[in-house]
Length: 84
Image (tube, rainbow, N blue to C red; front, side, top):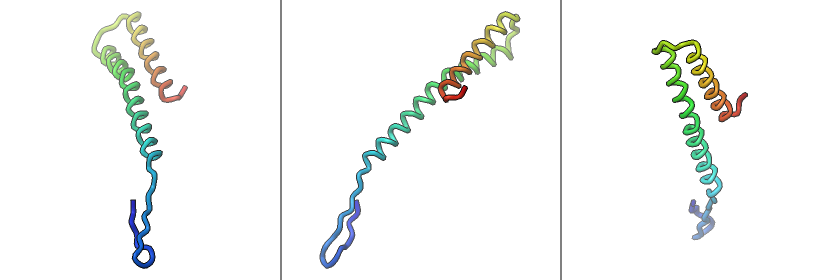
């Protein structure tokens, strides 16, 4: 709200409705928080699988299983961000 001099002995009050701006900001914050939360899980899974593959001797069957699960988590993240 702004109060400006206007003519002799008068004031002009200017106001602006910021409801929509605040609503849009809240929606943006919620969206970013949701995306961050949804991506954190598959990233954690992928990081664990990478660590497993680096640090443990895996049989060919175990390695295929881990790589398959890594692929699934990668697809999940791609779906979350809208890429194919």
